[in-house]
Image (cartoon, rainbow, N blue to C red):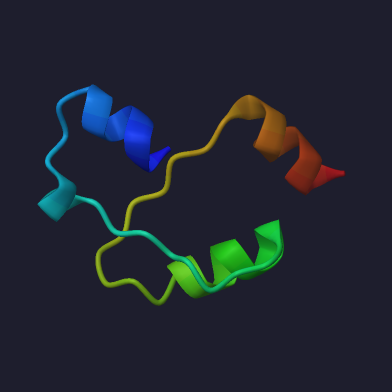
Length: 51
């Protein structure tokens, strides 16, 4: 996702990357600790989350 956003012209300084997680759940949990973070998601992950 980071590379994609850079290709779309988003500046690296505006991006935060959570790199401690080993699972999707940990990624979400650790990402909430990033101040002011917005979350990007896809329908695929949203459906997986609900199941």
